[in-house]
Length: 209
Image (cartoon, rainbow, N blue to C red; front, side, top):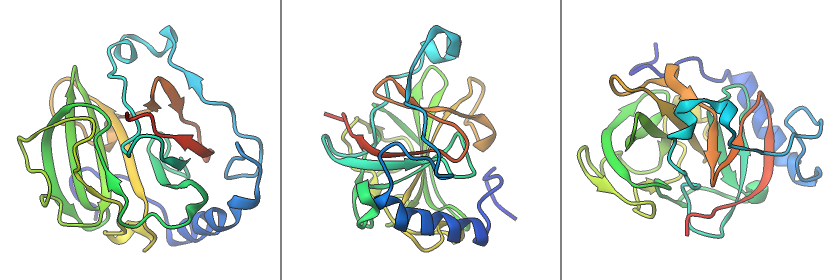
């Protein structure tokens, strides 16, 4: 049984397929989806996203400025998994919040590994799974953080990591308490939306500058 509201996760078969796709996906054209069809271009935030989106912080990628990354939704859209562009090795890469906030939870989950949850105000939160070091090594509950604060490094902790280093990342919205996976929303970086079932964006530059 999963703990702390961590819902449906990938099966071993799905993980194997995902890992294979990451391994061979380098040879595909930019903007190719997990299924091999052309992936839709990321969509700008629009008024149609609703009032919550209008108040959403302008999140940046949780990595150093000008570094390049691959984003996959796999089977857990709107959450995303992120590895370095080309999947050339992500373990130990530093993770930052991408927007100012306050740490509200740090804990170990047997599926998600080392986890950090950050509140960014107006009901918006971000979640970071599979971090390499102990969840409270760099930040602790109650700490204020900035967009470039080091909160951990990419790892492969937890039973659902598949033993491949990646950052599982979520943006959540809830105004009456700390959200769980049930409150996940489409991910936006620098005002651009990355969402859709089993989609891939193979070259996304961090603007966390």
